[in-house]
Amino acid sequence: MSLLRSFIIDAFEDHLTQLAVNVNINGNVINALPAESEFAPTLDIGGVSDSSLGMIICKKSDLLQMPKIGTRIIVDSEAVRISAIQKQPNPALVGIVYSGVNER
Image (cartoon, rainbow, N blue to C red; front, side, top):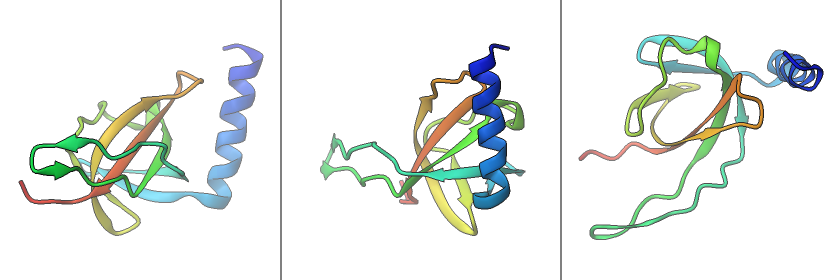
């Protein structure tokens, strides 16, 4: 692992001790960092889709498998739905953008 990637992971883990939120993805509970989402609403059938509520950043190694868009997750006791998955500059991290849960 490069020195920069190692620094990023160390900083991520340091921030986890201060700011972590609990996230339940398919029964797997992990700690993640809350982040501001840059995901914008999109035009959908029937109008504009919901804008994102937020984003979490977690380590890929904490995930049992990569979640799919549309999967329901629980972020700090709030049920939400994954609306996008974003790659991070460090390949060991993944960003998960979520919005409110709407029945389909």
